[in-house]
Length: 411
Length: 192
Image (cartoon, rainbow over all chains, first blue to last red; front, side, top):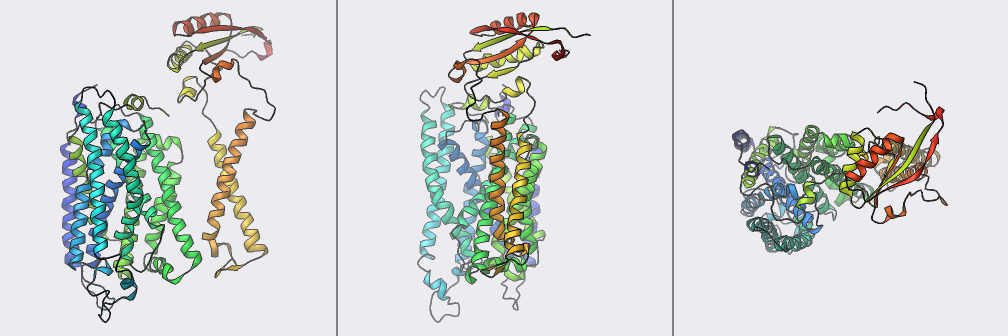
């Protein structure tokens, strides 16, 4: 095997591409903030849409990296053999997590000091009776928000980073040994992966309640956590798939079999259905029971975000269903990349649809360059961080008990 | 060329491992020998391609059964809920089908899955004739335990060639299980 091809160097074109995306994104973000004006009639605060966009971009790629960490942990916990050859790519995607979480933290701090109005419950005097901001519903929940919210947020971040770094470190340490006789590092990671599943099962739900559902403070849905989880999982799988296909195309990862990529395509297909299932379950129960405090969530979306709602449903459900059903489509890698890109954008739009109605509300004027500009900035940053992480370790793991199985993987 | 009666030998190539068995299959096919079937204790990915089986059509069947389920469910719900006895359940009247589409989706989904799954299973059982009371058509019971068997039906010269290839690729046994005569009218012109 060609040893040069085991050490990844970022192609200058890719670096340029990432910087170009970041540049375009940065200009859009600055313009967006300059153009975002207050609207007294509609009770629209200045910069709300701009901040919401930045928040959506920061959350999307953080969640994606987190889901990649989950996917990695899942491979260990399930002792899966098919994915060993692409393990370093998954690891590289998880390495965006510290960046993403730092950005999220920054946004939370700005919010706490009233720099933006994404979280209604962060407003001063919200639970003080007599204050003009007083909201009795939130006052009832004040024990859950406030200090307890911050403790949870910090715990999530510390917990996720601990597992992500530990999984990565064990994997790299295993490479340093000539022969790992008892697969000691692997078994450590199996344990870590299993424990991470437990942590993730709880925190993926609670963190999406805390960070996303609390935007619509008065509204609640127990299914919401899984819905967000399925969305970030598919985004992660799409990112990994596109990365693997691209790297194979420029000459790396020659030992990754077609069947491995075919399997990634199956994941894309399957999780699209998981997402649809959860999205629809949430919608149908609320639609059917027709309880005002629940229905308000979809009412806002139906009134001011109808086009976006249908687009999201079509792009994330009907499109992958039709496009990825046959085996030949999943084995055509150009096609897989194309479908993946569309789904990826579709799930970003899904997040826009989750965030905007709670912040911008009826002042929404439809999708614009602002959403895409912000998306480009975070995409550029994500690409840059992930490609750099790929250069940090050989692309093929050395001491892994399932390496041979993965090299001969065929379906 | 006029077809004449042909004598066909039944040959069992028995292997202890899948890797040499696959190799032997490839070599047999490369030298123009048609493999009648292969019996293995577990499923082997990619074997159907190696022994030259045509692609399965079960996926097409599944699609047709699924569409059937979708249509049946829609027809049933339309008849019950819209045509025959319209209801107003929880402020969701069913005066027309599209009024309450979200409520109909779970049933449509379930019926689609039900018909696709049962249709596929029944098709498979019937096609393989795995009906109640069917006798096992296993040429050698050891293939249900730890042996891999290549089943060949060949004429005289091919039989010799096949035996060489099988032995040369690590077959543990090559068993001759007699021969039979193919009537001239059934003999196809060999394409190889």
